[in-house]
Length: 214
Image (cartoon, rainbow, N blue to C red; front, side, top):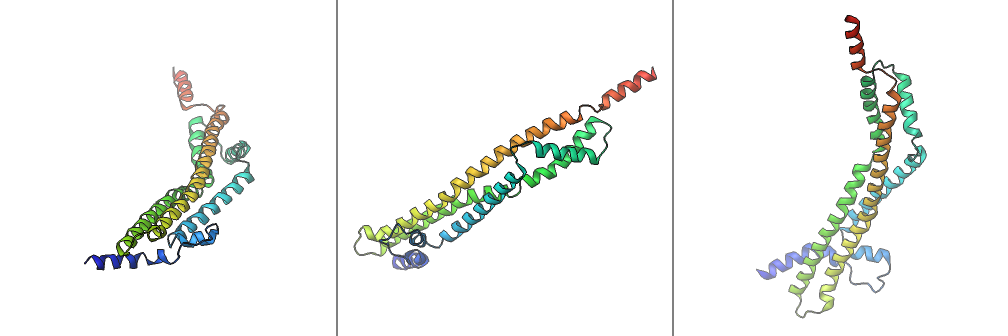
């Protein structure tokens, strides 16, 4: 029974043993292949994350997101399209319309965050798979030496490093973008209040009406 279990484990882990320890460990492609099949989804996540980072960076530079002019221009455009009688009405409508613009600014950030969180999880799964392979090698070997367990441990370390190498920069850019957008939203709220302060409030109209009635 133990031999059958050992055989099954070795069979399932067989892709991990496709590459023996390469003397050319400095070769990036060789290292990638030694990481096993799980390096491919990690690579895919890396490509997705890099694509979003490049696209968002170009977009933010295009609109000069650090400058509040793009927010002010958007508010002026909305104010020119609509005529508001009361401040509360204007603030409510402007905030609703600006939310559509905010969604454009946030495009892709949810996916970027997901990439940053999924990559290390897949790397950790590779760590577990590599350790299973290492122990399966020990169980199958007649004599145990460093080389018997080295391949499995190497796989574990490579997948962990691969996942973290994607997660760290991805999450760094995600939180950087979120920080910038939070500042933009705060400034937008200030501008909305500033641009609508000349409009009367409902309460002011009601007070005037009640005084006229007296």
